[in-house]
Amino acid sequence: MKQFLALILLLSATLPGLADHHLENRVYELRTYYANEGKLEALHARFRDHTCSIFEKHGIKNVGYWVPVENKGNKLIYLVSYPSRKARERSWQAFFQDPSWTAAYKNSIKDGKLVSKVTRQFLKATDYSPKLNIEAQKPERLFELRTYTTNEGKLVDINKRFRDHTCKLFTKHGITNVLYCNHMKDEKGAATTLTYLIAHKDQESRNASFAAFVKDPAWQAVRKVSNKNGPILVKKGVKSVQLRAVDYSPLK
Image (cartoon, rainbow, N blue to C red):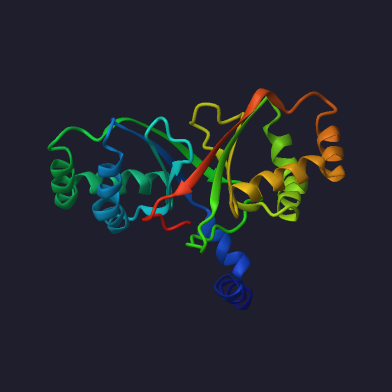
């Protein structure tokens, strides 16, 4: 028995699949900041010069920071992660109590508050989500944040469709799978929402990839079969936001 346990420990330390599963079992938080008029650049400066490094200091993992390609709402959208929800609460408490943050915050709002509203969502990676590689590629990519809302009881079906078919077809047509998440159980819409992040070479590539994907006979067959017992998604159940990574984003 001791030899068996030793073997398991050795495999956990040496086999990428086992190690990655442990590392990827994290809580993600997707946050959207709505900057006040004329304050978006100051908000970027605060994150670039202060917030991101203070986050890391207190165990908040910076994943990616983006602005929508069409940013009429003056939004900053970013993704961070933690080992657990409890760890998240400890990290934010320490962050808010950090004198470095207090000073940076007070200095940044001396001419008016930067943010009018903040929204957040807590997410967990699905079992088919690829290992998240937080890397800055060159040239920088076009990202796309997509949210699917299913009919009641159909979340398992949309996950199955992505697990068994869609992700592979995306790859076939040049779409990079980055992260697939379901909302945590205490989140609104947790039983009916899939949120995922994909990447493209550029806008032209994005349009060409989706055009080829939609016309693919394999996708058409899968879609037909998966909806045979009723539509998986609600009417207008797909929302998409195209994103551009900011200069201080770890993921580009």
